[in-house]
Image (cartoon, rainbow, N blue to C red; front, side, top):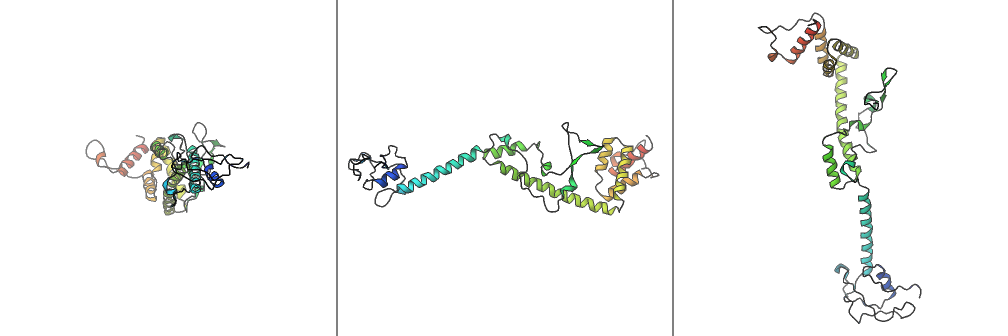
Length: 285
């Protein structure tokens, strides 16, 4: 019989299942030295008749039947399942970033902007290779907002996060999901800030933007660029804008100096100090 199996040599060989099926008379002894462990083959073409010895002691007792024989087919099936699981595990491990720094801190695909966030309101300047905005016809070239604009690749805590992910052998997709959560939190803050800014502009009336532009030009004309920009960035409410307009208005009464030869800067409020500085600039001092 050309298809008959020879007795396997390796006790872990799954071929024992087929060999046992072809030799139903084979007694499954626990000792390979038992001379009475003979097969029920016919001794024909495969040369299987005669004394056969098999050691099934390597099979866990969970596969041992009540009659002392072993469920070799069940053992073989579980062995194959475990082999497949190990293969999948090895494949997953090989797909992981090889080093901690290989984990890319960026939002994965499928990210959904929080409800109420309009990316068209937050266009970003296109940067050249030198890191400066690209100018086209005298204007800064703008591009569509990208959620990864919210991710700081130079965050000082990033190496620690990468090390933890690498230590626990998690896939890159988890890093993307974490980045998405952090970006979503920042975007919700932008939504609230934008909402508050719109409400403040509405409080200034229909000419709000014109008034803001006038104040910024006035500050740029009277203060060094860094100071003018810092002060302009602090205009976050209608009251702040009105206060600066009052300071810039010609004829505003100067702040009275403290007794002595100078201003009592220690007891002045920030607003009073700003007023003094602006008045001195306007007076050319």
